[in-house]
Length: 191
Image (cartoon, rainbow, N blue to C red; front, side, top):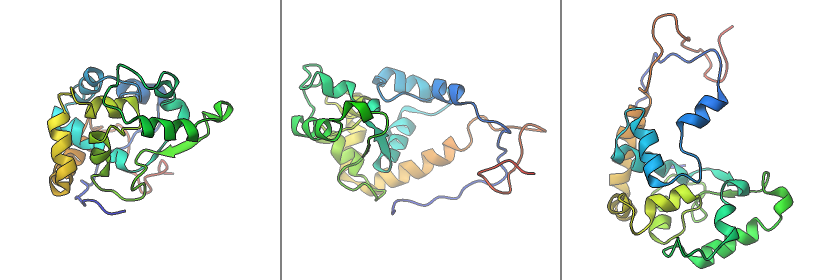
């Protein structure tokens, strides 16, 4: 899919169970404002710049209509003057079947959905952030706007910063001693 490569540190222990509620508590939700997003990243030792760089992972992936449909109900929204109205109209078309808002998916990056590139930031500068949290990051009055614009203009800067931040993210709260295990297959606990 393109994008930067990085050396993954070996020996990280994985837990024996997963906790969806804890995961959802610790990561920003799709409707988070910029202060919440920054706080969630800082709570795990990631900087403001890490937050902006790691958000670029939204250049790949999909979201359910239910995760951004609140933006469509009131559009054009006076609270989002820098949003592209044609973009919101296209999303409204994709998500027009309200009965399937939990199953209908659309790409986070409609322009280059299968390529890891800086298009996510280009989209934000153009007022085409899919999630409310994406829009908050790229809005004209966002404290992240300067970084967003630099990533939109220079993919190599984004790639370098993403590489540094993803390695840093891989070191958050490591399990030690007899906590967890180093898996032979990362998809399942060892037998």
